Picture (spheres, rainbow, N blue to C red):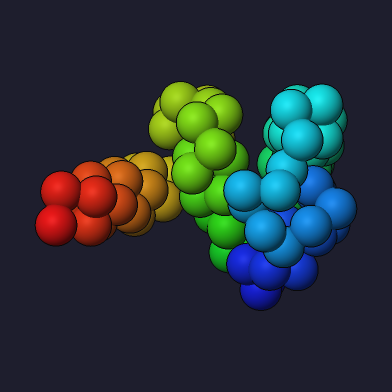
Length: 86
């Protein structure tokens, strides 16, 4: 999954700063539906990370069945936190 492609798919633009508030809400809703239907672990993780970046990701125990996936998500969140501090 390419980040820019996902932004275009869900928000109509590859520029996060250009996403209108209504498009943001609609895109997040579509991502939530897709996350609920997605069976592929990699695609599911990619959707969750995008939702997390927009502050709309579900809790780890809701989003992921395995501890391995939940740990990968925790690692991702830690990485983002470190990047934001630097």
